[in-house]
Image (cartoon, rainbow, N blue to C red; front, side):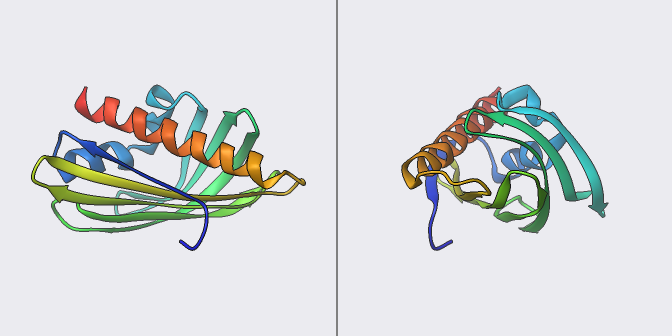
Length: 146
C-alpha cells in the first residue's frame, strides 16, 4: 500500500492460530473495543467474503461493508486484504494483514489507509489510522495468546 499506516507485532503462536482469530470476524467485538457489531453477508467456501461492520472509533463511527481477499497457505501464512464496498462516512478503508512465521512465533503486519467523506485534516486522519491499527494488533495478540 502506498500510503497510510503500517505496524507489526510478534505473536507467540503459529500462523494458523493467528489466522483462525482473523477469520472469525463475528468475534471481533469481543476483542476489539471499537467494533460494535459484525455480520457476514457473503462467504466463499467458509471464508468471509463480504462483511458488514458497525464501528465507533471516535473520529470514525460508521456502518460499512468490506470485501475480503484471502491469499493464505494451509499453515495460515499469507495475506488477508480488504477494500471498502459501502459506507456513509468513508471513501476508502483499505487494509491488509501479512502473516509470516518466524523462529519465535508469527509476525503480523497490518497496513491501513482510511479516507473519510467529510473534510478531515491529514493529522487527524493519520491519528485515527494509527489508533485503529494499534488497537487491532493489541487485541489480536491478546486474543490469540489467550
